[in-house]
Image (cartoon, rainbow, N blue to C red):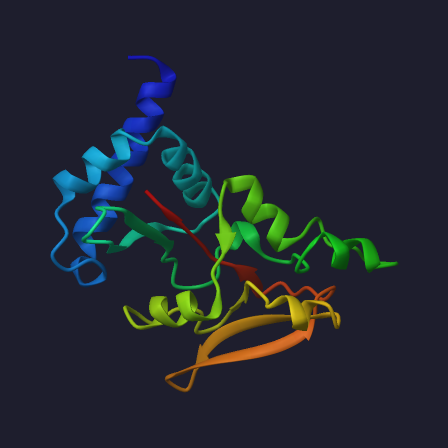
Length: 183
């Protein structure tokens, strides 16, 4: 088997292990169906591999029973380590005059073939577990807020999920971003 095949097998083994370890994230979904869907969608596997490589720990978090489309979401307990210290988007990065971060969350997500979670998706993730207890994650920001220079982020503190705002050009070592992909 070539290197590419071994890499795909390793990703599938990682995803299977995580899937089996966390059954409450995907009740009523069986691994054989998930595997078949993943094997039929190589582009989605590329996105999942990028999510995994940057610390996202993607797992199946839902299914559209009508279409069979699966949703995979970053399920790392804290905001993925390989995606922190980024401002919100390219406009924010370009606006920084000094101490520019290495990039932006929106662009990094796009390079993986994904988008930031929106507020509803972030809350849905928090309904299946406790995430971002010490970190925070940028979320997809409505255009009206972004047009005024702001961006949104979320975390979980005191047993509750909070949504906050910050200047889009800000960045912090404990703030990253989460994505999801549909397969």
